[in-house]
Length: 232
Image (cartoon, rainbow, N blue to C red; front, side, top):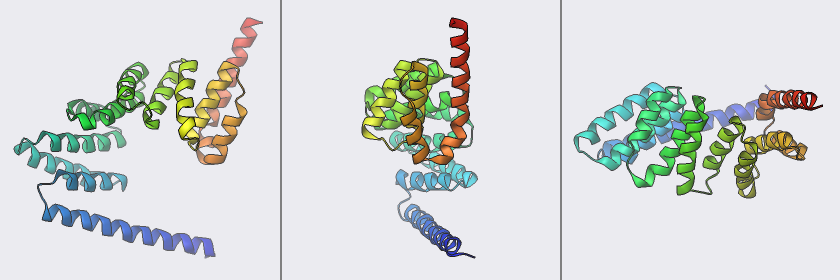
């Protein structure tokens, strides 16, 4: 085993230990303070990140039962948001949409509108995604995730100039986003603007993402060639 592989193995084991410690800490917090909804939410969100979906769902359902009985709406909203994220993650998008639509807490509104926009985008319903994205944008105009979902939905709808505006807003503050750089490059290609710099940046930032998305460049080039031959 070479040094790098050995180091990676040690790092993985260290990460695993840290994660187990954190899970244990959150379980203890629930035992000590069973009436604090955020303890259940934090553990459920961590289990979701660890792809332990069954346990996460079980925990969210159990917690919802507890706080439903207390009619604690703020806690119910928080837990519905966590369970909605879990369903979104595993591809049960309609169930996620139902839960995000139930959220009433003003503090969580922008997040739930963003997740609704992302959910509709996952379903390929880009007009609905734009509608929810715009509502989220009114609440948090500088949020890069909200601007990204708007840019991506508008790009899918062929509204290239508008999509470019949202990507530009992100890149002013967050130039290190490969997905934004890449999609801004696609927009520039279609609009006849210089695009290579955007694509180079995306490639440098995240080669795997770039390679996974490269087909889109070829598709757009093909479409542009067709359009040009029709116009000639």
